[in-house]
Amino acid sequence: MRLHFLVVLLLLGAASSVTAQSDAGSKAQQIQMHEQRARDLISQKKAELAAKEYAAIVLLDPQNVNAQANLGVLLYFQKDYAGAEPHLRNAVDQQPDLVKIRTLLGICERHLGKTEAARTELEAVVTQLTDPKLRVDVGLQLIELYTAIDDLGKAANVIATLRESAPTDPRVLYAAYRIYTDQAAEALLGMSIAVPNSGQMHQAMAHELGRVGDLSGAITDYRAALAADPQLPGIHFELAEALHSSPETKLKEEAEQEYRIAVANNPLDEKALSRLGDIVAEKGDLDEAEKYYRQALVIVPGDVDAEVGLAFVYGQKDNPAAALPLLENAVAADPSNIMAHYRLSTVYRALHRPDDAKRQLAEYKKYKDLKEKLRTVYKDMKIDSPPGGSDK
Image 1 (cartoon, helix red, strand yellow):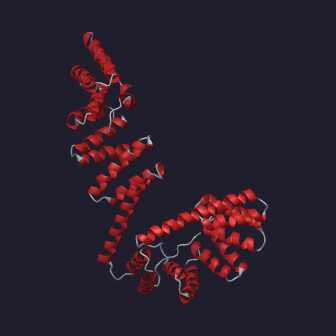
Image 2: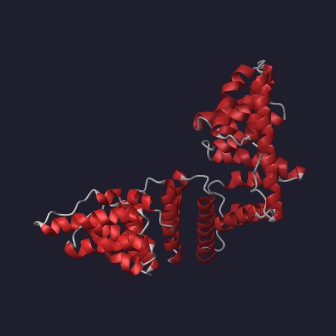
C-alpha cells in the first residue's frame, strides 16, 4: 500500500478523537508539542520523522491511544510490520471499536505469520467496514486465510457478504467461482466415498455431465438415479429438463411425461408446471397452458418463466393489455431474459407504443448477442450450459 499522508490523517480520525491523558505540567506540554510536530511532519510527507515524534509521546505516555495508533500506522506503511504490530495491538486493546486500526492490525499480523490472530481481527471488522474497496480487500484476505485451512464454509460466508456490497467486482466473482467450485468438488468426493451407488451420486454425476455438454451421459445417470431411488426429490423434473434439451425427437417427447410425474409427485413444483405450460402451448392448447401457468404463479407469484409463458398465451389470444404487466414484471426481475424482451416488444407494437417496442427489441438483441458470445466461450472451453437451459 502507498502512504498518502492526508489519507492517513483521515484513516486515523477514529483514533485521534482519543486525546492524551493530561499529566501534570511539563509532561502534558511535551506531549502536545510532539503531537503538533508530528502533524506538521505528516503534512510535509516526512513519515519517518513523524513516527519519531509519536514514539516520543509513547515513551511519555504508553497508554496514549492516539499516539500508539498513529505510530503503528506510520510504521505499517513503512512496511515495518514487526515494529507496527505492538503499537496497533496496544491501541486496539484499549479501544476495540477502532475498526480501521484493527483492520491494519489483522493485515500486519498476517504479514508476520500470525495467521490465527489475523483471522480473529479480520473476522471482527470485515462486516463493519463501510468503504466498499477496503471491505473487498479485507474480505479477500480473509478468504485466503480460510482456504489455507480448508474452511470453505467460512470462506463462502465472506463471499456472500462481499457480493452484497460489490456484486460486479471481478475479484469477488472469481473468488466466488473458486470457492463454490471447491465446495462442489468436496461434496462430490464425499458422496463418492460414503454412498457411491446412491441415487444422489448418480444425480450429481448427471449434473456434472450436463455441465460439460455430455447430455446423453447425463440422461443415462438421471435414469440410474431414478432406478436407485424412485422417490428421489426433483429427479423427474431434472430428467425431464435433460430430455427436453435433447435434439432427438423421441427423447423430447418423453420429457412431457416426466414433467407430469414431477407435478404429480409434487403439486408445488412451479417450474415443472411452467414447463408443462410451454409444452402444451407449443401444441396449440392455449387454455391448458394458461391453467398450468396460473397454477405456477399461485405457488410462486412473480415466477418469471410462468409470467413470460402466460403473457405468450394472452398475446396469442389477442389480449396484449393483459400480457403487458406480466412482461414488464419479468424484465424487471430478470433483465437478461431475452424472450421476455422480445415478447414485450411485440406487445408494445400491438399497443401502438413504437418507441417502447424499439427499445425492447434493442434489449433483446443486446442480450441475445451476449448469450451467443457466452456460448462460444463455453464451447471453446468444452463446457455447455446445463440441461434445461433456455433462451428465456
